[in-house]
Length: 324
Ligand code: UT7
Image (cartoon, rainbow, N blue to C red):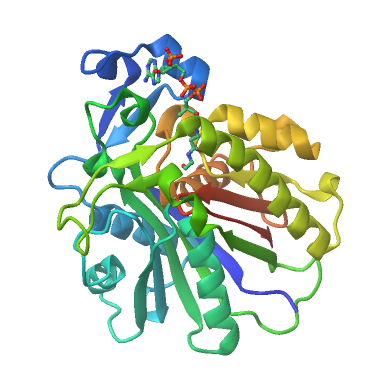
């Protein structure tokens, strides 16, 4: 039996655009280096009045409008973020209050750049058990707040934003790769890779928020291997051939990772949705942001077979195949 169905998507970006040239005025970098190594040309950075919760709420409202459903029908909010408004309570509860749909379930998921995949699988599992009928699954970040703006090896890579989807519990009569809904999902983590991508602070260690630290080359190497492995697992579990996939919506960390992963699996590059040039790496927000962009510009259509995939700190990684 297929899992939950996707009813709508939405996204939100901060007002301010920061270009590579803007960053070259702050640190020893250049537009040429950033474009050549990552594909990134610009990113959106949150202003003082913009937080993870405000961006998440705006994305959620857009997704509700797109789905044509009322906030009152949402019984579950799962929000993926590594940059919550507060250490607690969960940013999901702030979104719930802002939407005026209190009383249901609301919590955050911490799986960094794979957060949206983890949140989607968690929401789908709860919907399948009947705990709620409709869910908002949100990826929202203000990574600019945990960047070391003196460190050129990380500060040029990330941006802020939010994306959201509305999910509906499976009706029970949809099964197989041609029917709508989530068809197959696989998630993984390898905690022994902690030091390759982490934040050097936190409430229980330093009592500070800390900054992002990354061994970029190592992360790159693991990302291509882990992503192609998990994509193969999901393709096998779903019983499809690579050619049947209409679109791949990957986590947007680096255009070279997207190219290398697609090549390894024999996926045509024109089937890969790329937004890293405009959004940079928005961590948990990147997959739902890219999904929303490609639905709204008409590339991803109802009935398409779409593969979502991501890899991030932990390491954590995962993929999910969904028929729209
Ligand atoms: O979202 C979670 C997952 N994250 C990722 O997937 C990120 C994965 N990693 C990457 O995307 C790439 O490894 C980076 C974009 C982070 C770096 O690209 P790279 O081709 O692996 O470069 P590198 O780290 O090997 O650095 C090459 C050179 C170094 O100089 P030397 O030691 O060769 O003299 C760096 O110091 O580039 C230098 N460099 C820079 N130069 C100009 C590093 N950052 C910059 C910069 N501007 N911003």
